[in-house]
Structure formats: C-alpha cells, structure tokens
Length: 220
Image 1: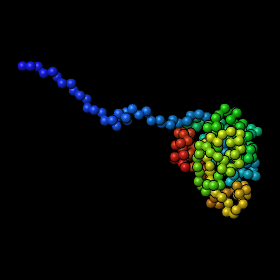
Image 2: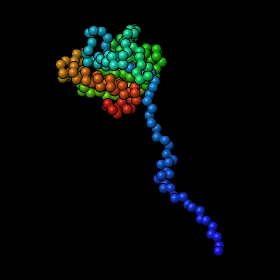
Image 3: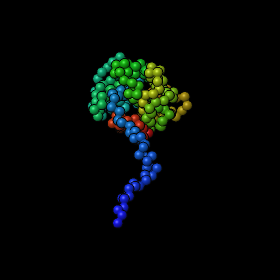
Image 4: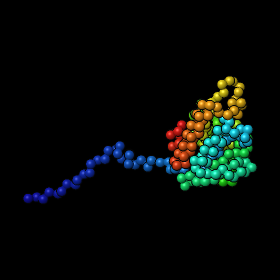
C-alpha cells in the first residue's frame, strides 16, 4: 500500500478589499488641546459703556470668571485680567482697557506677557450680522467690518486666531449702527442676551475640555 503525501492546506484567499482596509494608515483622532488659553472679551472701558451691545464680550468674560472661579483682579495699563485653571489647563481671562478700535494693543500686551501663539487666543465679540441670541465659533477669518478684530489682525499680522461672534442684530433704522452698538439691551433683549452668554460659556467649556472643532460642531 502506497503512503500518500499529505496535501498542504491552503489558507483562504483574503479579499482585496479587506487587504486595502488593513493597509490603511490609522485614522487621526484630534486630541484635546492642553495649551494655555488666553480668552479676551472685547468692549469699551468705563461705566458709560457698561452692558452696552458693543460690550457683550465683557459680559461673557464676567460670566466665565464666575463660572471658573477666576478673580479679575489684575489691572494693567492695557487690560484687566485674571489667571486660573479649568480642567487642569491654565487660563487667562482678559478685558482690554483700550477702546474697541485699539483692541490690538491689548492683545499684543497679552501675547508678549504670556508667550502664547495666536491660535491660543480666543476673542469674544459682538456681531451685528448675527441675530440677537445667536453665536458662531470660527477658527479665523477676515474682520468683516468689526474694528476691534481689524485692530487685532493688524497687530498679530494674521487672521488665524479663534473667535466667538455673539449676535446683537442690526438696528431697526438705516444708519443707526453707532447708536445701536452703544445702547444697552432692553426688556426681552436683555433676557435673550443672557441666554446666549450662557451658551457662549458652555461653548468655552467644550473648547477647553475638547477642542475648537468639537465646539464648532456642537454650538454653531
């Protein structure tokens, strides 16, 4: 009786699609950003401008300071600021002491003092092109007619810094932009702006806990 040679067992052929899937590079997951953040709310200094539409950025900083237990006690020539921590990250909250159209001076001071990059700054400001109660987070872009943002871009020499636009709506009559931004919120407007400021604070929590991409997807 002749002994048979055992046959070699062939592994089943792997489909080409599965091979391609295995050879794909690992997907990139954006890691949370843990660098220091300098968060600046724009506005005009002085009691005359307190709680005006143009100062909604200041209102957001005041809420963040309470929310994160950061004392805004440092009064420098260019800004009022406070330092603290949120979720193990160092945070600076600031309100410029320059007028709106010189906001870049305050930002330059903060960049020089804390050694941060433009991408580590978040600027919160009023936006007439958004309805009252709306907000938009952007990673950069043009000033779109906002003098404070134009000043910052001029000082930083880049448009690439994160910003949060808070809607204050357009004036009812043509040509009334200046009086519109320098007037205070009234009645239902005050209630609506309180809601959007709360939402801005939640968006900032998200941006610091995760990153700007997650915040934009969740809050825009």
